[in-house]
Image (cartoon, rainbow, N blue to C red; front, side, top):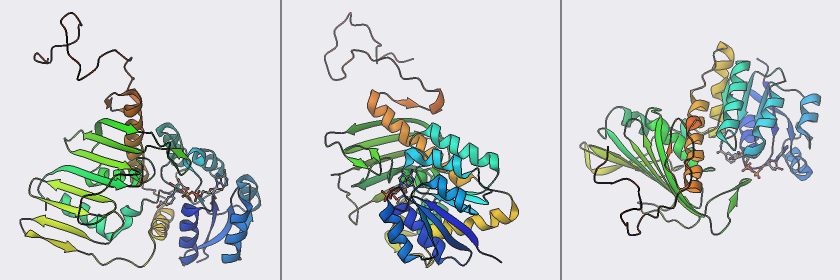
Length: 353
Ligand SMILES: NC(=O)c1ccc[n+]([C@@H]2O[C@H](COP(=O)([O-])OP(=O)(O)OC[C@H]3O[C@@H](n4cnc5c(N)ncnc54)[C@H](O)[C@@H]3O)[C@@H](O)[C@H]2O)c1
């Protein structure tokens, strides 16, 4: 069978993960890459001489239409590039996480892809790795009892750029139950930016899911994790046990009635990269003509939580879902922690409805 041709828009970290994955796959071949920075094309053209390189993605689409396009620019341009790519006779598309810089943009992207009825990859690495998939399976099987809390500590990263991976995992761990509300606070004193976005210095995001499960995530430049290892740490708490794991690490620590002292478990892992797995997962969907959008949908759910967190922090309000129906309440002069004097109005917290 002839290999499917692939082009790439954006040749940075994300684009190169897709490019290397395509080059390593027996089912795909890299054909063209567009990056605004000519030096990126020059450098990657040396590594992959078969690659035609461009600085303008529209020019590339015209000169070298491919079976698959990988959209690997910064989130604010994902929509523009994707909508343009969808004009090609594509067999499938990959759009990097976060789908868009806003939920509305991400939703427009997903809807446009659905309209074309072609498979779509959103390469959340955790969703194709043995370790997190096994944790999801164990949790679903009740091996830590009933899930209650997912605590996430994410040093040196922010809600949107890495947090979306962690939240997407947490959403899937919780059986894709919808979110009920998000309350978040962001310190922004250092004016940190990352991956084309302004982000928080440190933040805390507290999510209540409709089924009662809580997700509590601490992100930011200076936070420290308090687990068995440094770096990203998840603590998954159930009524009969808990799991600690560390994002991209290949193992996790399980404590439950079967392992009361705890056990470090390292599932056998595949040799291929996670981007290659995501790209190759498109193949059966291309063959069957029946795309499964559950992963892009859960990515959008995670993006909704990210957006709700930034909205909550900006306005100091609890953001209730569904997000598209939420209206920001007008600001008021109430100062929690200040003395209350009769005549100030308000609501008696001893007499809640
Ligand atoms: N799934 C993952 O594990 C993973 C890992 C890394 C990055 N990403 C995602 O990839 C995306 C890009 O991030 P990055 O880390 O690669 O950034 P990066 O800065 O390393 O690369 C982005 C590249 O896109 C190019 N670019 C920007 N706008 C363009 C346009 N309109 N046309 C052509 N080229 C354009 C830039 O010149 C740059 O070379 C983000 O959405 C990021 O979240 C995902």
